[in-house]
Structures are given as structure tokens and as C-alpha cells.
Length: 503
Ligand code: AHR
Image 1 (tube, rainbow, N blue to C red):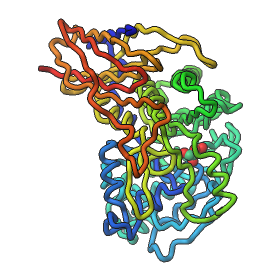
Image 2 (cartoon, helix red, strand yellow):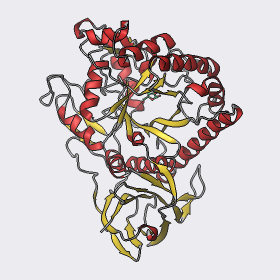
Image 3 (cartoon, rainbow, N blue to C red):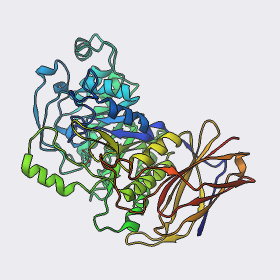
Image 4 (cartoon, rainbow, N blue to C red):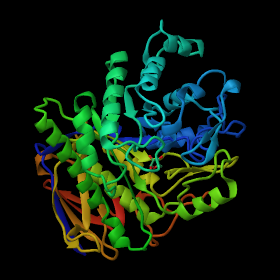
């Protein structure tokens, strides 16, 4: 058995974990909304048409904030289409995903759903085909108490109280050629600045997220952040990051190392934000919103075929990645990476939540089930609250195609409000178990409360409606705690949660 160790200290803290680190995302895309969270006529549908079984699964995940309504979709979206009497809402061609949007779920319905899910809404405005004026209007519609054109429209549409949406995205991926109304960094920075200013004049209590690069692979990455922040730094609160990984060459060690790329991406964006801060002699710090992250590649080919067959159909089954066990391990390492950077990453959204590259799958008229990636997210969201701890990790490493010195044991830890400690750990070793020594001496007496493990002998194992529990967490081998030192056995190729509590 190989050996690794981690030292934790109560005074050695990264900082408080913003609960919004466990956000997710619902876009008007594929079957996320229609056939996902909403399916009137389904045996589980409530009086509004929302599926109770899906809501229950979302509550299990514990998602404090949900980004909505896009995504690429938002860059051609008119928010006015999605409010008012449903039978008068227009059907529109959605040029982002080549489908037809029926607008049967809109702002009011989604806010109601989010409330039932126990989530806040993070609302994206359209800065693609539209601009600061319409962004200002929807803030007035959603958040102003009444006595003005748009707030009175909300009241007339049946919602007297403001929706009080606190976090707003200033468009989506505005650097991408695939985006409706794509802009240069300078054009976007100017537009974002004016939109942010006007939105905050309507409601000074809101926070806004400026679009960073749509991936660290973009040729404009870095320059984009620098140029656009130069134009809008003082009026924005966060910069967005988006990143998806895949394993198309079936290289498991290389795939599992991808969290290192995520870490580098975060550090680069932090550096650019702080460079602009320094250059402007600003007192204000712009933090990060990693508002799209996940594994995404399984469904690419399938989507091309769907578009060939059914372009413009409503609720096409797009981006329906079926996640396997190794995907869950990378998602675990991505969560660990977010926790390690919790001092600067204040918001993060697993993209997405239901059916579309999602932890939760549904069948129209049928059941719903948890994909493999559901579990690491649920564990981190449930146990990774409080304070993120700095860790001193000693572990053997490996080299792969794109990275050297990849830690075989990828681990971090959190300190809960009740004094409990949660250690999250991915063993990237394909063959060998590890004996992990956890030094907890500074925390006083603790007992090993639980060791949860997600493992499957087949890295390509998946969950399906017929076999929903093929990959699911189980009790781990655990270990001993003696004199503030724990010895825990970490199985080969596994995701682990080790929880220590006061006796
Ligand atoms: O999450 C799927 C898509 O990925 C989003 O619409 C877009 O923002 C990104 O490219």
C-alpha cells in the first residue's frame, strides 16, 4: 500500500466558503426545462407543471443558487417574451441551439421553482442582440417595488413582491464566435460597464458578473480579461470562468489530471484581476464566478445527428452526456480545486443541473435518476461548508501527457461551524490503495464519524434508469484516530469523504 499524508491546522485557513460555490445552472436548452424540471401531465407534476421527483433530487444536491436562463440561449432572448399570460407568449426560433422556444416557462415560473428548490436565482441578461437598456428594464421588472412601467407590469402579471434577484450575469461568453452578438473585448467592456452602472442605479443591492473568456483555450484568453476589465472594473463584482473537460482519447490518468488546468486557469484570472486593480490604484477586489464547469464530450456526435434529423424541434434531447465513474472522479477533483481557491472563487455553477450535461436525468413520462457525478457534488455541497483549510500534502506523483508531478492523492479539507472536519480526497492511482495519515492535532479531540467512498471496478461504469445504483457511494474502510493523527485507507481510484466530529 502506498503512503500519503496531509497536515491540517485550525489557524491555517484559506477563508470562508461562500455557499454559492455549490451553484448550478438551468438553461433553456434541450430537455433541461421542458421534460426536465417542467413536465405538465407527468404523474409527478405539481399544479404548476414542475416535477416533484426532480425537485426532490435537486434538494438532495443542496444547490443554493441556479444560473438562468442561459448560456448561449440568453444572447438572443427577449425577457418580455417569457412573462405575462402563457397563451400569449410567442414561440421563437432559438439560434443558439437550433430549437424552438415556447416560453411556457419564464421568469415567474422559474423563480417559483427555484424557491421550492431552496435556491436563489442568478439571472443572465442579454448583451448579445440587446444592450444596457433592456438589462436595466429587467432589473426594474424583477426588483423594483412598484410604481414604474416594468415593476407595475410584474405586479399586473401576478407577483406583487419583487423577486429580489441579487446576482446578475452581464451576458454570456461574449468572446465566442458562436455567440449571437459577439463583441471584441473593448466593445464588451464598454457595454458591460454601462449595463452594470444602469442596473445598479435601479437596484444598488445587486452584484454583477462580467464575462471572462469562455475557456482558457480561447486565443484571446488573458487579453480579453485585461481589456474588458480595464473598461468596467469599478462597476463589476466578479469575472466569469467557464471550462469543460473530456476524455476523447481514453487516457484516464491524463483526464484525471485536468483539475490542474482548472487551478492554473483560476490563478491566471486572479492575476489579471489584481493587475487591473493595481494599475487603477483601486481599493476594490474583483473575485471569480466559475459559472460553468463540468465534463462535457460524450454527447457531441449524438447532437450532430439530432440536428440533422430534427432541427428546430422543441426540447430536443441535446447535450445528454451519460457520465461514467471516471467523470465523477474528475468532478470530485474539480470540487477540491474550487475549495482550494475559495478565497477568490465566490460563485461556481456546475453546468448544468437536469438532463443537459447534468447530474440528474429524467425520462419524459418516466423516472429520474442520479448520474455518477451527482455524488461528489452532493457530498461537497453537504459537507464542504464553513471554512476552507490550507493543507500540506505529501504524496507520490505521476507524469502524463500534459502534466508533470500530478499528485496521486488529491485532497483538501473544510472546517464546519460545529467544529467538524471534512476531508475530501481523490485517489488517482489506478491500482493501489493508499494509507493516508491525517494530522488533526491542533483541533483537539475528534472522532472518525464517517468514511464515504465512491468506487467502481470499471472506470466506464454508468447509471441508467434501469440500473440507477450501479455507481453509488458506500461506507469506506475507514481507519483509526490516535493522538490527533488519523490513519485512513483510501481505495485505488476512488472519491472519498472522511468526516471527523467532536466526541
Ligand atoms: O452549458 C452549455 C453551454 O456551454 C452554454 O450555453 C454556453 O455558455 C457554453 O458554451
